Image 1 (tube, rainbow, N blue to C red):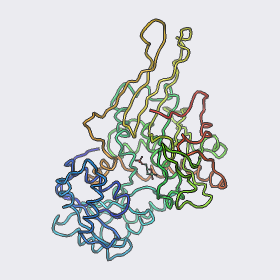
Image 2: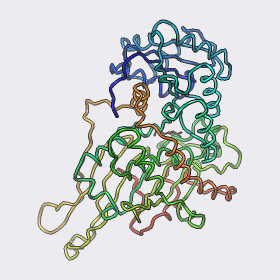
Image 3: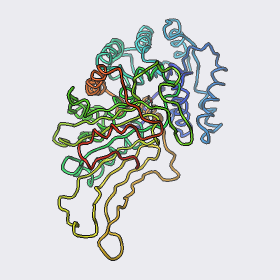
Image 4: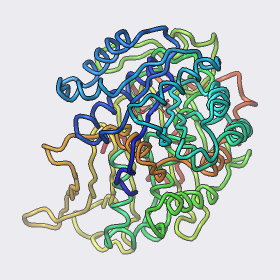
Length: 494
Ligand code: BG6
């Protein structure tokens, strides 16, 4: 994870520059990097979109987007540097002529002949193939200097379509040129998990089946599907979140220490975890996975409609907006330890966290004292909205008698004056600098589909019905049946 900028000029081309991903994530993240002085003087940005705009119209649009998104972090001085880096090219993704204009724009004398180019495909996955082909026809492809393409998820919709997409991309680009983003890997706490585990002698010896009772990975969202029914109603929570973000969190929690922090060393260890996940057998599906859909309810003070009443959702849709699943990792470190994963929309609170529950002490030494019940220890790594880590341990309450209370060893790592980074800031800088460690290699994507595919097949046989949960709740009660032990339950707070 070498963050030194590569020498020489670089072009960063955004396909879909006027779309929502560019407006909500890419432009604000690039602007924040500019304001923080992290962009190389020789970096040029090129916006490509279907809208027939001239440079002024693009600049007007971009200023509005950046001002809106940056809020209090907007600075006119940084913005003027940022805007000066941009050029706009209008064109249809399918039209070879548009790519000729792109080549022209990239060959203008500003950077001389520049081989270092990143193409960010902030477009629908159905266009990944055509854009790769057109780029290749225009001369940007395999073995061509330092050209690379960046792809957003979803990467396929099952293992077969993911393989087909990969084969298509490989006609035009080598694996080292393909950057598959999972933005959860850019989140600070996720990277901190690596530091927490591998930079502290204290943690690693207890990070295994001898001490850990179970692991919970929760990504709870309060928001509904908004205007994304077109995509979401086909994808559902399993494909949208669990196959990628939650699986990646699981690999970082469970992986062995890599030999180095180089991209392939890290990815090799993550792949071993994915390979060791026990596939969910058909007869175990009901006990191992639970899906549901939000019904109307109240989120905070607001009444919100059910999923079925969201604009664009198909009548009688049984798409899941909540999924909980139990996995086992069949290796020496984790044999027998359940990993409970859950994610849902319209839940009670936004909360993303990894919570690790430790086993009870082997001897109940305090049984005869007023301490009736000893709660187990937890380590909680909260990803958002609050970034923090803490351990819960017992201490004696001051005073007469043997009573304890749970205290927290708080390892929150951000000081008040340290501004939180958006995951995209980290990841875009990595793209510019050619660091692939936080991007997915195809075998990771493929193995994650291997875990999820049996669930999709199982659900494909049960299309007529889906459980519901009221919006604003913590999800369906049925998800509790996943737990192996009576003393296990979902942790809904950090
Ligand atoms: C995206 C999903 O990948 O991640 C969305 O498509 C989801 O459905 C989003 O809302 C969550 O990301 P974050 O960073 O807001 O937790």
